[in-house]
Length: 311
Image (cartoon, rainbow, N blue to C red):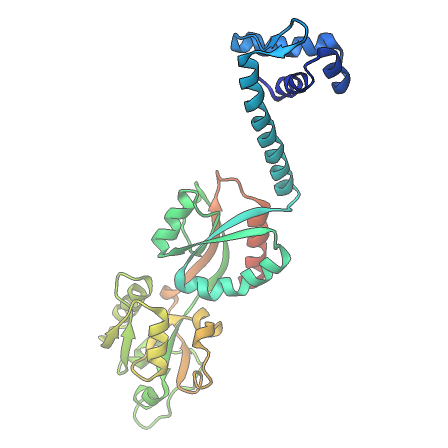
């Protein structure tokens, strides 16, 4: 069965005259009869009572009802595919961790939506493990996050290398300085060991940031005083700003602050120091599956992400 046969059959069913149907289709009556005969042979049924006046058989009526639905769906599918081809519509699903998404997607998605309002956007949020699983299962078109390092299955492009910082309440700075010296100047790169006497707020070790903090402490021979653990990046920053403890976090969370971190006194209560700790640097990539269709919407999003974050 092909759509041309169905289309010709439907015209004949509507006209109930092979002569009129052939004229309407601008084909010969013999050609029309041939198309209908192919359908009858394929299904093993008779579609028309060919006595005068011509009528549809029960099988013909059944095929006509369903053919109209099929032809309508075909037409709608062709229009939808044409819209996608011509970039008049489409969908894009982005995977990003909750905290990183709040920072990075806020810098991309508003502009992307302004430029491409016809694209319906979806988010897959969660842990790194959860968003990578969504990518492999085809539930996310692109992911922003830590490098996956699976070149056989995943194409990745580097956005930037994420460096660590230490954020310290100003009230703790005196304890960071050696006796008789001034506290380190905020914004200057420091060795983590200088903050060894500070109390810390941290994430649990099974969280990526908690794991990095633990390795940093071990590599520098620091046994920190832990005041509190939290699984929330927002809570982590807020407690530091309120003076509970110092924290370690990626520089992007200090360079591009979340909207709900914006407080007039936020910068007045902490000092931020880049850490001289190359082992803590993390490549942040944008990725998609190699064997998965990459739409124009995804291509445009990747291009915009690289423009915003590649440095």
